[in-house]
Image (tube, rainbow, N blue to C red; front, side, top):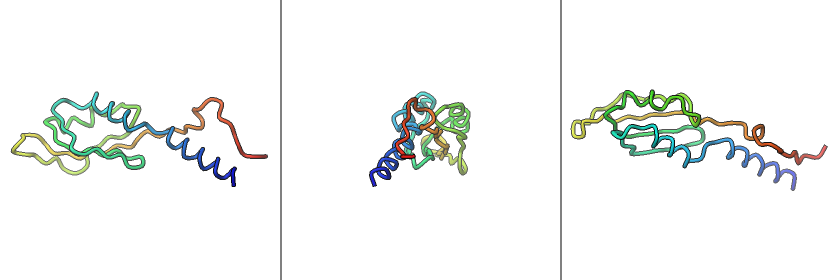
Length: 115
């Protein structure tokens, strides 16, 4: 039972270590999104990042978010919806979080299984 618990804990630690933290994702978004973009909703669910908001540069958001080490394949989903009051386009953007195999990247990883 102890081995099963240790392996379960290691699995969860590896899964967590292989993903960017929410703080890293928010920081990267803050650096890449133009000042004319307002995020109304940010969701990180499993490996999917979803942004909903308004921007006067909505059509250029994908280009601005490409090339990040934290996510892959940013794409606008659905049609841009113009807001006549704010003169911005409402958008929904999704991307896949970059998940790495943390067990391979951790030096000195120890195998707790018995032979």
